Amino acid sequence: IDSYGNAISNITREIFLRVFEGKDYRVLIQSNKNYTDEILEKHLTWDLDMTGPYKGDTRIDNLRLSCSLLTASLSGRFNSYQNKGDFKALVNIESVEGYSRLLKTKIPGGIGTNISLDAKVSGRSLDAQVSGNLLISRDADKIFMNIIGAEAQYAGDIALSDDNVLKFSNGRLSTEKSEIAFSGLYDPNKGGINGFLGVEIKDLSLFSGLMKTDIGGSARIDASLGGTKDMINIKSEFSGKDVSIENVMLQHLAGSIDISGQPSNNKGKISITATRNGYELKGDSRFMLEKKTLAFNDISLNGPGFNLYGHISSDMEKPPAQVELEADFKDLSIIKAFLEREIQGSAELQVKSGSAYGKNMTGI
Image (cartoon, rainbow, N blue to C red; front, side, top):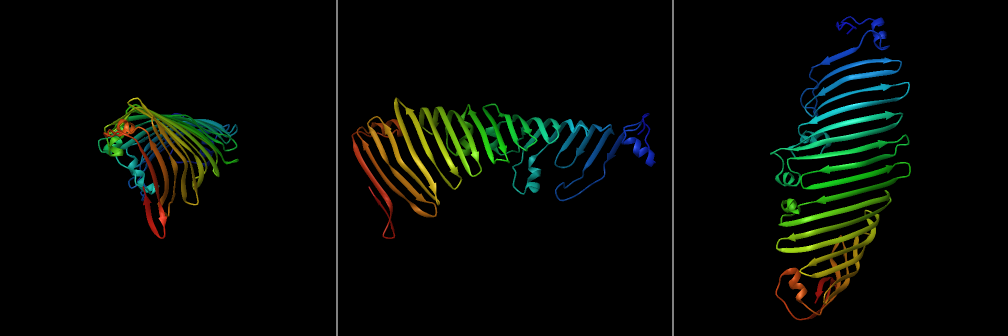
């Protein structure tokens, strides 16, 4: 259309050149034709209102897209001489289930989202802020609805440097009874990976349906990841307060895990502490996964009047597990404290289990 708003139907070469010099005219395109394919299933409509380029500057006042998967709008400015610009985008997805065919995986229904993107580009670098809402309808899976609630908010910053280093920061997902924070970095040049995850759950009963048992209390998990794709180090700490599993209540529960290596070949250490009715139980063990054999060595579990130690190993392709455990109960009342079973006295226990002479044998 020209500067007076009149539509131009006969586009001459002169007009075409003046449009792309940003003089007198701007481009206004509208389309409501049906473009059908297997992914979109329905039709695609789009509108474009833009000006330029003039002295390298192109302005998009509005680009709108609408199809069966989403509706989206974009505006912004880009200067090809300076190779920089800024954009704003809004995306609405009524149901992410529609992406099942595109991603070739089953995505549950009843989940929609609104996404807001504010981005700046300069050369090959990108800085963007993302925020939005997850909207859960009554059609969603009941377990998922119990965990998330009717709505969740998410936000985060994304940065891509000129040398292709990708960074996530200030990431968060918030619901009424839980909070997840995360950040991360990936350097393809060095193969470096770093990340952090923090999870706070105010009410564990939300997960009763998922665990198929009654649980309660609150918990927090902090985890960090670092290294390369060939050698990963993972550290995690967790803590819980008034954690209940069916009828067993733990006033305090804490632990940690430290892993280094590859997904199929790694080693580390795990520890745990639990308190119930004034009794404190502490345990730790080293572990190693090598050639599809998982081994827990130097197992130690201690409490008032109670000690257990030994090791367990298992070939994932050739069960059963090899077990050697010894326990000394100077006071069996600790079993009552944790398992609510009436028992008194003292005991010593030895357990050996494994395969011998082609048979599975257990000795107690």
